Image (cartoon, rainbow, N blue to C red; front, side):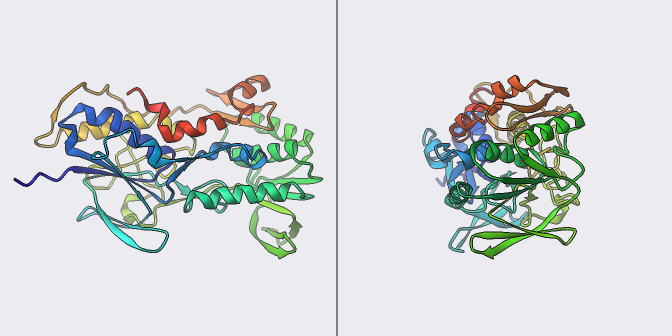
Length: 392
């Protein structure tokens, strides 16, 4: 007798959101379905390593800060019949026949059939310092290259006034001797996502104390090699500056070019129901999570707190399909509810920084305790291992 084909859950994206969802399903969703061996996960990512980008600013200054960990090694603990990893990038999707085209680094393609689909492809930044655009070795070497340049740099320009730009400016000014370090926010103030503007003022004050020159209302429009290891930076007012090191810490664009246009909002993010993480205007059993989803405010909390909700939604959808009896323990109902108040901790060097929790400013010492002393480098291996999702 021919065995029935397993229900294949394809997860596109292998970093914070994708890896977290895969661990959660394998640990909590499959055991609650009977029989669990009727299900399978295929995780697709352009990199075979996770990347803890939260700690990139510290890694720029400290060579021993390890941010990359093997996905294959992390998933060896599971039954191989339940999980497969495919290294490549989703480049096309056919929603009618439920098929994703994956292209590897050599340009070779393969087609993967899905029954359920999780879109966790994140965003692509202009600089490889903040996202996995191919194999992790490219991002790793880019960080190493910046670090080497900073050791002898006399001038640095950082574009972007969000947490990445502010933290990077603080780290560089603390760990390196750079006569001229300039930060261009590109807007009216630093940390523009925060409602509490006083926190932004505090951040700018701390940066100035470290010798960082902060500029507002001027955007970097391009940067290219000027020869002699220099970079020519062009601004939106037509002016230019030549510097030793340029770091682009501006935001990213969603990795959704392969998806049907009707699944996306006007900005290209996947239109997602916040409570269930189901994709609106898409067929059933299509989900999205993380920075690529429309609900996200582009922070880690919008992933960690949403993973259990997505796991519950997938479990609930699977158990309602004909022939899927629930076995083992039922999952506790979970629906994602986003924290509306400001939640952001921004180190400015290893001794403190600024922050706001549930809308309230926190003191410098608490920023040190929560983040700045290590910049969470110790959390990097936990991303790969799914440490945040041991319990349902």
